[in-house]
Length: 491
Ligand code: UN1
Image 1 (cartoon, rainbow, N blue to C red):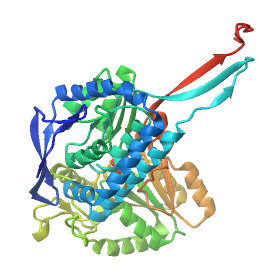
Image 2 (image 1 turned 180 degrees about the vertical axis):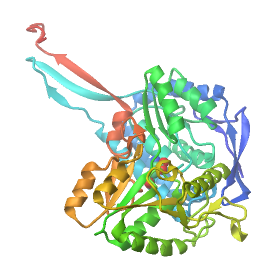
Image 3 (image 1 turned 45 degrees about the horizontal axis):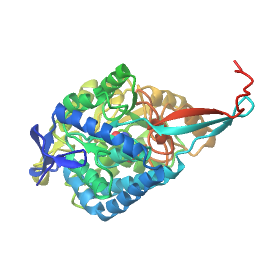
Image 4 (image 1 turned 180 degrees about the horizontal axis):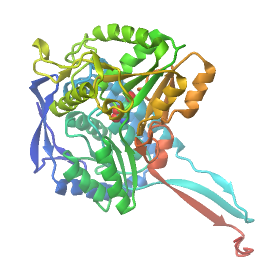
């Protein structure tokens, strides 16, 4: 069991706040770590440390900042197994999923280390003679990074890597359920020579610590991933201060399966999208919108495949599905299952908590499929964040499109078809920030933008080159070299 500390101004400091136990959701008799519930005074100290370090870091050449990230990349490669195991024990996902997440974080660091050499502007011809006009990207200042428990390695890294290479300093507040992975990540950055105060870590709840960060006068931008309730509140607090805010929030992602789809492929992708990461993913497939002509066959195959899934402790390599992250999340999932039943949908797989033998001390739910779901039901509209899939039968492709778009979220969407015209129609019309053709709704790559539309997101996209735009201000420079003979202003 590790006792975790705040990391402020380059020092691991004891917190004066209370202590929170970090439990293994697959076996709650295992206490993995004890983390502080940092005080708002400590959060303010972290913001002040970030402010103090800003001048030095902004003046460090970007390629030199990138070199530190390359070192972190190598360090994370060396410590990948330790980080993946901590992730599985702390969050519950399978060890294969954890290894994949750590690799993704490594790729993100590698990508942004390289981007450090490409934080370029433009030269633009002016309308005036002998005028040189160009743009330059400058850091915004100290930034707050507030992250969720479901991807506690990849998401913090995909925010801090672009923030740091752009020359910002960071105050990082991880989710209360995943403090150990956060500490390990910060430790790796510290081991690679990041100057004191450039990256700071405080733990604790959104109300006390998150709020202090977004309201602190030193903080110039906030990047958040998590629930809509929290995100909209943060966005409001950031707007009141007039600072940048990026929020990546909920999803209710559809997989649309048309009559000419490759069914074997569609079934595999639905399994991966709906039950991978135990459905605790903002990109999870939570609705299968299937045309009537193939719906029975699709469901038969899906049920057969679902019954082969092994639910258990993620450290066991035979496990295909881990637990819900904690008791509260488990209760949410179970309550949505009863909501679905009460709304008149039919459970055709799973539908209950698993408590027998090896599931006794964990928060396990059997992978659940509802048939007969009407698009207006709550289980077809609200984000559940668990292994629950709603099958919605529709009469044709047009109804499928309207159904897919008939929710308030717009993160990702998949279309399964072998017809080029249908494919392009869906690509054009699906209301989602990420559209997949014949591939699952989940996933994302370091160098490819990620984010959603509608109620899913505000602010610029994450990852990819565009991520740098959120973490920089664009300065426009006009240089007049007429040497005192300027002919006057144009306007
Ligand atoms: C993925 O599907 O691999 O919170 C990325 C989330 C997303 C990340 C998912 N921001 O689930």
